[in-house]
Length: 238
Image 1 (cartoon, rainbow, N blue to C red):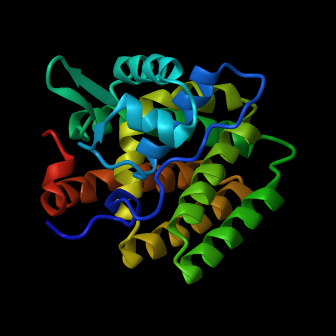
Image 2: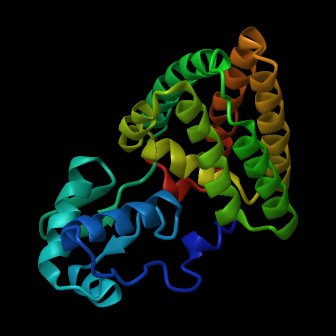
């Protein structure tokens, strides 16, 4: 198997201590674990220990146990009695289902956004510039965040930002596959080109062209999903 991304190799600390706030501790623990799993700071198939997580997150074991139960419910963690707790591996079937949902909703949001009087293209252009910077500096984590923020803007501009929020739990498997693809410079370069074309179509209110561009863009996971499974077989279930 080829070397996985730095985050999945465990370089540095994959978890950040939970900071006290108004939200319940278990909610903050859950959010940190979801973020770490989604961005491959914790690799697919990695073992999880309540004791270790409590120490790393600097919280008691109770909120960790509650967070793990929620992670099991959304399919990110598997618990086998007498064996242990592990991060679920990536399922290409789940990825395909998430791709279908995301593509359908995002294309619809794009069409509505094209009719919006204020399309806030300044934000989109700034996010494109950020992606170019991250590409040049090989800041893959920053690139992934800017990528997500750009797609979120389509829903913000359309007036249906709540749809983006509701979609997040379902696309976690998809996001892990997307993050796994980023060490490839050709993939990052292609994403910048595609994002730029999508924003240009939005500026021109080109609904037909934008739909085609988005469809091809979101569907790219079909092209590299099988290749990534062959490259990182220990990360996949099917």
